[in-house]
View 1 (cartoon, rainbow, N blue to C red):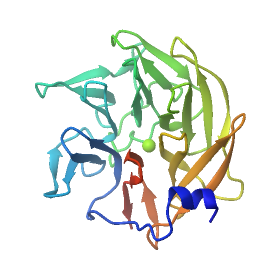
View 2: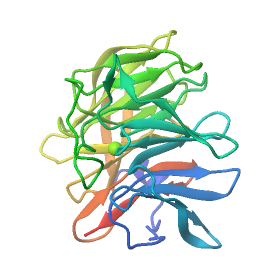
View 3: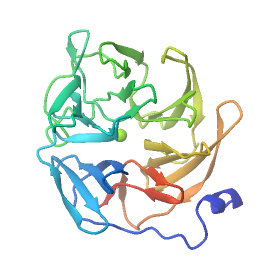
Length: 281
Ligand code: MG
């Protein structure tokens, strides 16, 4: 363990299992105002709610086999829905509206992860992992690529940012000048500069661990700019520290449970507190 890792994850820090019994969990998001956690159970077709006092309950079922969840600047829930092949927003009156479902007349693949920038623009990834009956719906892929998209703050312009990979997890740096994009298939994380117009440029490799199955999925960035990334391969969650021009160092892994684990998406709700969604099999 490096001393830097130990500064972030103190000696004796424990992994606590909140609940179990789910099929495949993803997309945890903490609602600060409401004091509760939401996360997706994708095959279970549910968004679950957890509070420290009352534990687990159903928040929404069916959920469109939702995956990534986040909140926009007004606290509205933004959900990537595999089965409905859309990104939705839950309005303050409870109505669920589609904010993105097609690109140039063709259905999106299956939106996976979503982040909201401080100007209200919404970035999401669109790999094909939901085009099967367990994790989404058994339908044809219409778009010949997997994109990362930006929806303008007014919701009227959906721009394709990249289409040269199979993007999965997304995260901004604290000042939003960088966008991290995880590619599970390529076993790496790329980082892009975010231009003033919200478009991305200058993509380069940020994290690539040779010889180790990083297989990155969900990511979160803390206030210092450390990147927390979940991955498969039994390694749990690693912390990547940016160093100079796109180079990174794996500080070390948070070891979780023995046996095989599927990791969802981590996030930090406050300093020193990290939630990770996963199922053990
Ligand atoms: Mg994902």
